[in-house]
Length: 110
Length: 110
DNA sequence: TTGACATGTTATATTTTTATAACATTTTAT
DNA sequence: ATAAAATGTTATAAAAATATAACATGTCAA
Image 1 (tube, each protein chain N blue to C red):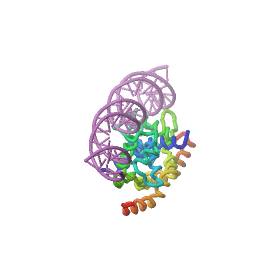
Image 2 (image 1 turned 30 degrees about the vertical axis):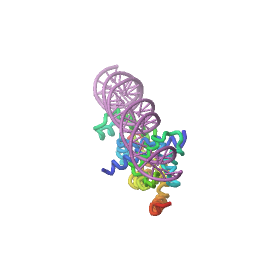
Image 3 (image 1 turned 90 degrees about the vertical axis):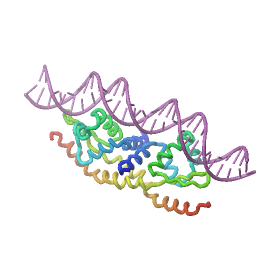
Image 4 (image 1 turned 45 degrees about the vertical axis):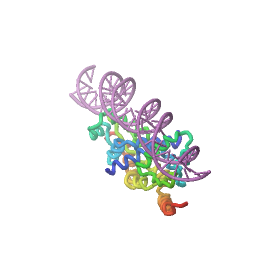
């Protein structure tokens, strides 16, 4: 499983508004699947579970079963990895690129 | 246009492997549309342009026309915004949540 | 054990994305 | 002016993601 596959799963998982909302809900405290469904009444329970499976496959949530309940925990580490590997790079170059853009635009006869 | 719409467009734009690749290509230096198409021979020119439109709508690239050429510049600022607003939060809480998870798992009778 | 509860699975319909073809516009060079 | 180059648009086919229904499993409490 390549690094690129990992970040593909993570970005795809983060691409959906409802999944980001689920992560927000888990940010404060872990919750059971039932509690999450109750917090998102406009989505069918099955739909919520399908989203959870996507998040779990991306390793953005960690699942722990306790009796007949399923407790879902946010795992922020993959997001931090993306930041370190990806966004860090871009942010580092941002000023650079913007200033290059600016000077290019100011010399239109090149 | 809400803040959430903005980050939705940005995350959706970043969700595609090929669009991330385009951003990578633009990271080093701005390029014309033609140069980008040449760099991604496995994709049809129209497909590349469709991806560019998605990136442009998300404000991840800035477009400047020079004669009959179109120069595409990476704009890293939206990515940095996401980091500051979103990933920063998660990363901040990461140690917190992981340690809470750990202690929860070690006390399974709660 | 038995019924109710919480969760899980599989199949399928709906919607959204992605790829491409066909055609149009703008600019450069001759 | 005219042909070629570079880009742009619109329509549509193909593929993927999302929502939901129908059914299945495991666990608790009486």
